[in-house]
Image (cartoon, rainbow, N blue to C red; front, side, top):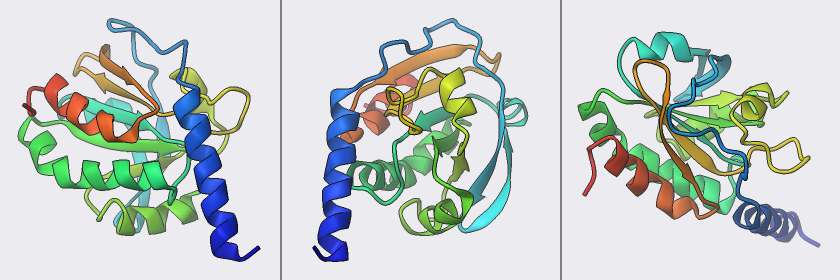
Length: 178
């Protein structure tokens, strides 16, 4: 089996799991969002993302995804990168979170995220667990997105395995979409 075929099969398996296992215990609107800091990459540069600091500038979208450079995750990242001007117009910060290591995310942040927003590394899945976003017992995030209001509370939850639905739903939730 060629590396391309193997990679494609792994990607399809992950996508199937993500679509079939939405998070059943998602945080609810009104819940206090768990505070976190995480190593993050933006356009290949590593820094520390702090939810507390980001909330000082306005609401924050925290979206969890299973694995960088897989079909749905790449699609979602590209959709977010294209929509960043609309989020910024509403003073909304976007961060993607996965259990990928920071070296993978440095590359992902340049390629699929087009350098427009941060992707955080949660290799020990502590943030993922705090947001009820773990994919079963796997060390991976399921596909779930949150809008966190400036006061640190969950304002909106989009829990769907369909990567194509997250950005439109989040844009609408923050008043930037149709």
